[in-house]
Amino acid sequence: MTGSKKNLKKFLGSTGRLSLVSKNNKLPVNRQCQLLEINRTSFYYTPKEPDRERENMIKNRLDYWHTKMPYLGVRKLRKKLQNEDHIKVGRKLIKRYMDEMGIYAVYPKPNLSKRNKQHKIYPYLLRNLDINRANQVWAIDITYIKMGRSHMYLTAVIDWYSRYIVGWELSDTLDTAPVLAAVKEAINRYGTPEIINSDQGSQFTSADYTEYLKSVNIRQSMDGKARWIDNVIIERWFRSLKTEQIYTHEYLTPRDLRIGIREYIQEYNTERPHQTHDYLTPQEVYQGISKAA
Image (cartoon, rainbow, N blue to C red; front, side, top):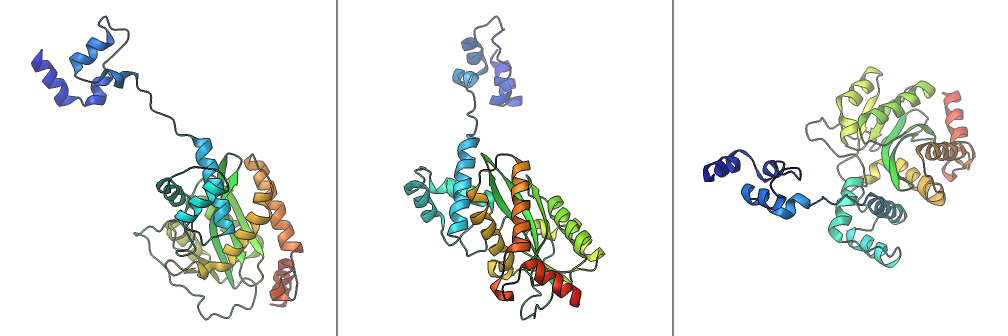
């Protein structure tokens, strides 16, 4: 019997031996565990399911405070959660959630797209560039959007000069597909820009994305590492969207969230005056410059 035990331990780990225990066996569970040399409590242990509702609640509040005060780090965000939201949570968990969401204090840049070190990084082309017309430069980025007890990710494309939103896509994943969908929608509706600027995230360095831009003769520009200011136009728009729309409404389904974002973009593009352009709307600036070109 001792030899049999040694063979079992040699070829089966504790998990494998645990799978041999059965309530239907003639031997009592306690005796089976003794023979297999495993702890009896392991047989009755049920792994605790993650509390997704609490996780999403914490992430939504983190996103709220980060949007309102992007300069707050882990320690101060923890204080906000504890003192104003009455949520007790440790610093390590906050850090893990922030990493998962891709949000950080203003330095480095708050981004959801993680760099893939195997991918090529493109130079930043906007430094000292005189951006003076529509479709000269577009900016693209991804942001976390709360939705009831869950969340989604919004990819948006903005015309740098006019501040006009030319394309967007809502998704529950952080991959390249929604990024490409947003860019293709924008190009189908408004033609191709000369340059598209993004951060160094893996979605924007992927072969699918970079090859597509090359195929339509768009030059690719990327922010300097940890320089959120390099893509400030789209960052500011995300902040406006969240403070004016997302956090003043309660969206419970992807359909409702999509409708809300669409309505906000329509109003922003057609009715929001910008001081930079003598209080013209993004649409007026975009269409006016396009017609003059």
